[in-house]
Image (cartoon, rainbow, N blue to C red; front, side, top):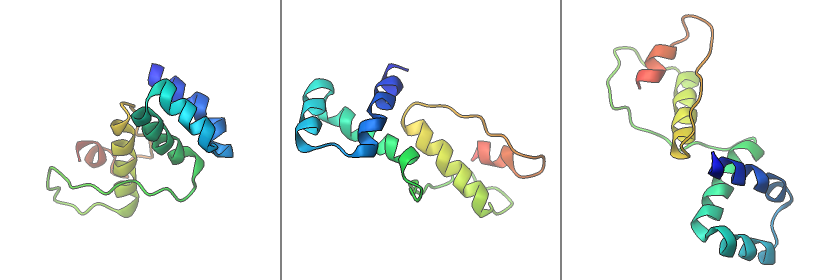
Length: 102
């Protein structure tokens, strides 16, 4: 949770855009890798057209996944990259089980 709180603190700066001096300051303070990862993570919430990385299914479902199911899986994978969890909630019959298993 400490990492998430650091990323959230950077959100206003991310939205305004960091100047080179500010960016260098944060890289020295928290590390270059952390700043890069934070910027990637925060872009999920600040950009409306962010594309999550594609994935390969580890199981072969007998049914074909719909596009909204694939988007849900991508979102869960993206959150998992940052050590975050999520709750998958939707109406009955829309494929939550197959999304979770995938």
